[in-house]
Image (cartoon, rainbow, N blue to C red; front, side, top):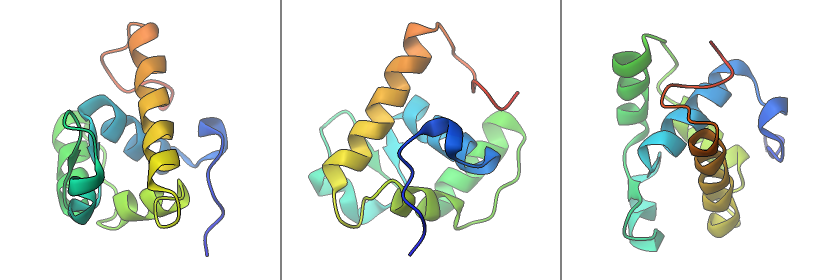
Amino acid sequence: MPKRITDYYEAGTKTQIAIDYCARNKVVPRKSDNRYLPESWKGIPSSEVQEGIEREFGVQVANGTGTYMWQRLGADHDLDAALKFLQDRREELLDAGVQELATWK
């Protein structure tokens, strides 16, 4: 089992990109979680996360990067905590006035 991410800055660069993409777009990389999410968030396939990162930011990540990130946030055991991590990251980005991905640039 991969090490759980508890601090954004301890995650690798591509994982940070996936976190920022999902937080910024209010999506999670597992469509089956859609029914458990607040109405403003959406579960999508990991492949859509991969395509979105490449389209919006010109960065190529592996197809499973979104799923791996979601698992490392603990979504398999505590979906609410994983979603809270993304919500908190979204707030950090908005508070900083950041409309683009933050730390990886």
